[in-house]
Amino acid sequence: MKQQLNIRQLGPDDEEAFLAGGESWKGEEPDWHTFVWSEGMTHTAHLQRLLDDFHGRNLEPGKVPNTMLYGFLNGVIVGRCSIRHELNDFLRNFGGHLGYGVAPPFRKRGFGTQLFQAGRAHLKQLGTKRAFITCATDNIASRKMIEDAGGDYQDEILDPFDQKPTRRYWLSL
Picture: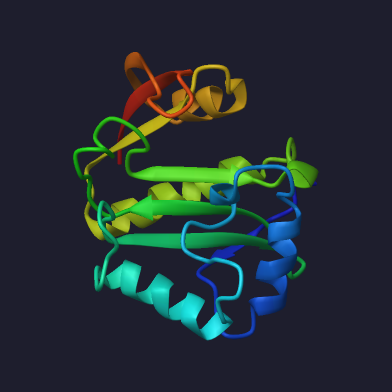
């Protein structure tokens, strides 16, 4: 039986789960768990930053309004989904509207698909008609998920940060 995630934004009672969730990503890039939290930041400040990002207030340079959703399983964060409400020049090439990640201990259990579908539904709710999505060419699971969801392959380019091939797709919502 497939386990169902509770996918939602962080709340005031989620500090412990958030910090523990970060531990699940040890050895990986911190962006897989969070884009805005940093060591020493209070939970209240973190929630305010996420709220500001959602409303497009006080955005850091290069950022766009966005929503960060976390997937909880029995109170444990197993992954996240970041939804960019609009695209800037960078996101039109890399990253796109939707990014998702499942912590290594929780992979291969269908959680990525649940996070992806939650992000897709959120974009649709925002009024987005077509979503731009990218993934590393060698990320077979992500490629399959995007293609199974009806993603139209656009092309493949090199990621400027790691010089790895990246596939780009458009997905009708």
